[in-house]
Image (tube, rainbow, N blue to C red):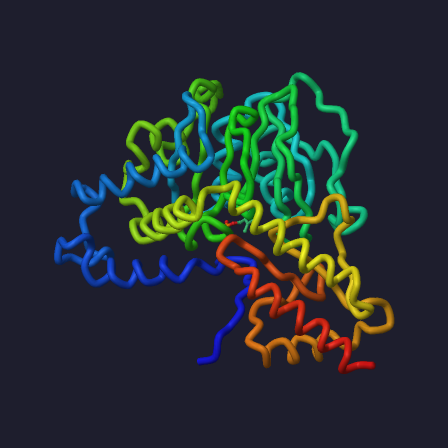
Length: 357
Ligand SMILES: *Cc1c(COP(=O)(O)O)cnc(C)c1O
């Protein structure tokens, strides 16, 4: 198989060393003679992995005292419900920046008073709404920091007068985050932190338990904090791969180093999109995501889309077809995607342009 360049939006490309270690662990977990897929989660070897994974999160994101990290099944989509269950009492607001934000809002609206405080639906979510007033009486404001489908991103930690809750599924570990500005942060691991099958949640402990509704055991964050994410059988394999992915991030120098590499990759690709007469970006420039780069053919050239997909496929480029709601192309430049991968894509865009002259 020739070298492929993977730009999948999720599950994401992971570092080669992570795949290699996974294979070893499936054969023999830590010299126990038992496969990772069959070890008991109640062994000390596994407990050590859980502890290390929590510690890695705390180190990499510089998580302050008073916060806990939990790992849960059900993906980010299940966190939409957890958030509403654990924090919504009187009223919550959601910044509607895309389909994921809308799905998060839907769960909250099903449980109580939740509404969209601002929306960019009028322009198919190609920008981040700004200048909206945040009422002081909200239980929380929910944001989606990176909009995976549309390629927009909130690239700073906003000052918020009410508790701030963020879905960071697709830009976690791509920049330094001031965790103290958030009530909680969550995401599915499969966009930048590991494989599918596990979600992470970073939770400020002292603000839990303020809602009056009955919380089913499995939907109560306090249960998972108390039990160290082992109230029931955790997704052992997914957590192990997440652990390996975090170790890789740490070994390369942490999130600041990731950020530098991610910005360079994104700048390279956006520069080509802006230069190339056949392509244009879909997100407004100031809100462009460094993780998911969305672009389409310029006006009059739309018919070349399929052509370009075939042209790039011949060069081993995989996963750049845009989401059906945006069309065109989307290149996801998560941490394990290399500058070389991006350079190959840029070269394909250049050669494609030349071939049409
Ligand atoms: C992919 C994604 C989700 C959904 O994640 P699942 O783990 O599949 O439920 C939610 N939010 C964002 C921002 C995403 O990119």
